[in-house]
Image 1: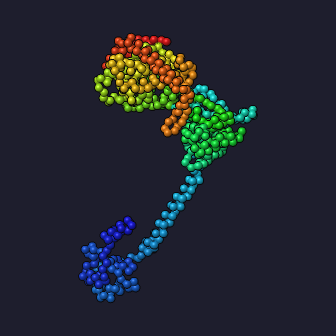
Image 2 (image 1 turned 90 degrees about the vertical axis):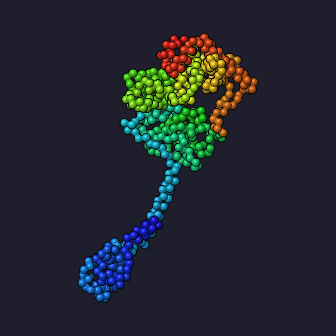
Length: 592
């Protein structure tokens, strides 16, 4: 339609005017014509004023005969430039055949694309149940090995046995040993479970099929089970190889619970995984490695011998491991000479490998923002605080009164933390707002701890309550600034009573059974295994623990009032106190 309208206006603007034969003869006699082109039955005339005209003649009559029939003076005809143009086959095709053929061509193209789309949909439908596992191509440059994994020494020792199975299966078969079917990697998020699985593949130099547990389950019935069959068939063809299922708890949750997202499709997928793991031939070197941070929700059938019977626990890195991990992630980053990664490792107790990688990345971003060519200590310390608490909010406007309250609040935390022997040393005190915190006191353990005594928890309660008590002591009233501290103190006191059995009155037992139940938005459901009378005693013991922490903190605040004032005044002046300056002001920390 657009083409027709365009051609209509275009032709109207350039199309010559059609005139009769008598007009043409008259113009020739009046010597107004400069050129005549004869094309078939058309006579195209160009006048001396550049006007173009068109005249039709009879098909069996030539132009010269036409002139003689009208008694045109030959001398006048001779003065005109006359030429004859023959129609080519292409012109004939465009004029006569193409207008009829074009609709058929357009309909043909339309049908072709329709059939192509239908065939594509059919092929997609046929491959819908195929596993979309990512086959990681191994080469010498991009291959991940155990050298690329810092820390996790025990986990690597366990996995070296799997590498031996994959590289030299014959020596195990000759002794009648069966290759383990499944290995389950357990650990907190960010501890390197996926990296370890890749390193096993790189060490053994075998294909690595990577698929997430959530990729099996679809809205269509049977698709998950079909994808499991497809994945294991592909793996058997590429034996020896590794199948890695990340976040297996997405499909491996306990069956028959009726809650927690349980439905037939997920259970069918899990059943198919169990069947496929039982169906390996003894000589097929296919090992399934799965990773999860929720082993408590897995179905018992997954964990029985013959399936995921090898469980490798990956703990959070200790001090030495953290330093090694920092060195690995610092390979491609230019560090200044004064940077000591051991100090960074000391400040990052409880951090996972992913957290440490994030710290170095944030430090590199900070250095680039300041147009520096190297990463310095300040960048790393700033990155730690940014990851732990949040970015600085220097532009946040607060009144002088709020600034003073914040300074005394943080001074209380720092003072009590320093003078109690069982607490972690203070590394930094600041009243600059970060994230949701108006100020913060940064503590870091000098060494990794795995067991925590009751006295340490009482001291932690005292530190948490110190800010609240300082506000009450100095200003005679409290503010909402201690809300987070009070919530954490209450949760810690409850854990002392209900989880750790540290209450003298209630005895060494736990209270309440916590179960996962994702139902109506609640993730944890606590089932009471005690009476209302015991619940009252639990509340009393929680209050008692908080009271003990309160008394400890208040004694230090009252006894070290001059030191409290010194810290607060320094914060009001400088806004931030680093570890060295703080220890110089307070003196050595008392030892336990």
